Length: 99
Image (cartoon, rainbow, N blue to C red):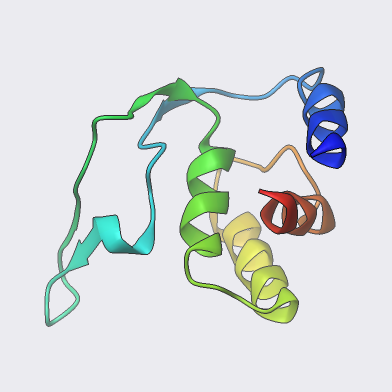
């Protein structure tokens, strides 16, 4: 718990882009059509303006990735997204491990 508190205190001093996020973006809350052409997100009750980082960490973490899978996912996200993560891939993995 102390590691989590310390990490949050350090991290809260960083500036980052914020916009509407789901905040409860677990794999169970993402529905995909059988032919993969549509996607729905359910349970929007926790939505608010915050960093997209939280949705990224929750969704990828809910898939129970290995560290190698996590790194590959984060690198692909960074390559394809206009929004850049304010943390390194290793810092994201650390957040996933302690959350």
